[in-house]
Image 1 (tube, one colour):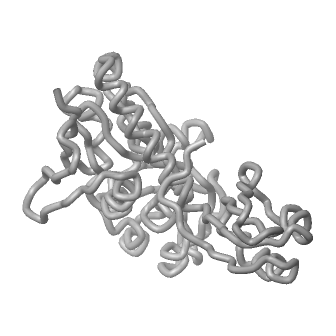
Image 2 (cartoon, helix red, strand yellow):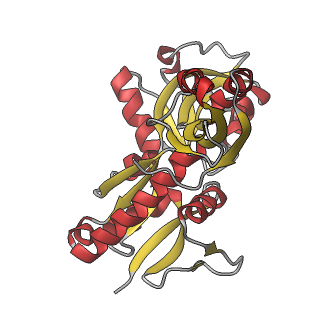
Image 3 (cartoon, one colour):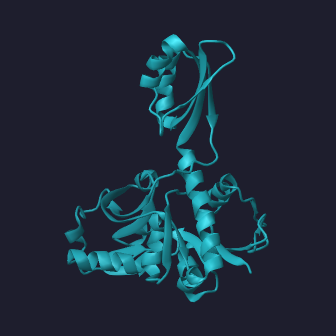
Amino acid sequence: MKLKLGIPKGSLQDQTVKLFKKAGFNITVSERSYFPSIDDSEIEAVLFRAQEMSRYVESGIIDCGITGRDWVLENNSKVAKIAELIYAKQSMKPVKWVLAAPESSSIKKVKDLKGKRIATELVSVTRAYLRKKGVKADVEFSWGATEAKTRMGIDAIVEVTETGASLRANGLRIIDTVCESTTQFIANVKSFRNSWKKKKIEKIVLLLKGAILAEQKVGLKMNVSKKNLDKILNILPAMRKPTISSLSDRGWFDVDTIIDEEVVKEILPRLKKAGAQGIIEYPLNKVIY
C-alpha cells in the first residue's frame, strides 16, 4: 500500500520541498515530470497546483496534500483538515487576501465598491465577502498579473500578499482584508478512515510540524561555573528547564537549552557578561513536544 501525497506546484513548491527535507524526507523534482521522487517507499508524490489540490483530495485521486486554506474555501471542498502548517513562500507567517484599489482612486472603503468591477483569482470567497458586507459588485476571474488590471479599467482587485510591498510598488492601497490563509495539510475523508493511511499521515504531519517549529528556535550550549549558574539560569528563557550536566572540571557545568532565535542577539552578551564560557549556538531540524 502507498500513500498518494500532493505537493503544491508553483509559489509554495520550493518552500515545501525544503520543509520536507528538514522533516527527514528528500524530495527531488524533475522539470519534466509531475511525479517527484521521495526517499520513502510508502509514499507516492505528485505535483498539483495549490488552487486545485483540495478538489483532487476530495475526489480521492490523491489521499492527502498540502494547500492553502484559501483554496479549500474557494473550492468548497469537503476534506479532512489534518493540520495547520504556518509557512509561505517568503516567510513563516500567514498570508492575506486583501482588497486594494489605486492610490488615486475615489474608492476608500468597501461600500465605495457598489457597482464596480473587481478582479481576483479568489472569486467565490470574494463574492461571499461582498455579500456579508452588503455590497453588490461585479467580481471577475483574473488568471495572474492581477495587480496590473487596475490600469486596464478594473476598479479594484483582491490579491494575496505577505508584506504588501508588491501592491505598494504598483500604486495600490489596501482597503480591507478579505481573508487570512495558512498552509494546511488536508486528507481525503475516506483515506483518513483507513488505519494504515491515517497512521502514515499523522507521522508525516508530526515531523512537518516539528520542522516548522524548529525554524523559529535555536539551541544554545555553554560552560558555566557553579558560582555563576543561578545568574545564567535566570537569563535563559527556555522552552523547558535547561539540561545541566557536570563537567570533568570540578565546579563546572554544561548548560544546554532551546530558545527563540529572535532573542539570541539580546541575551548572548548578557550570558557572556554573567560568566558563561564557550557559548555555542546551533540550528535545529525538528522540535517536537
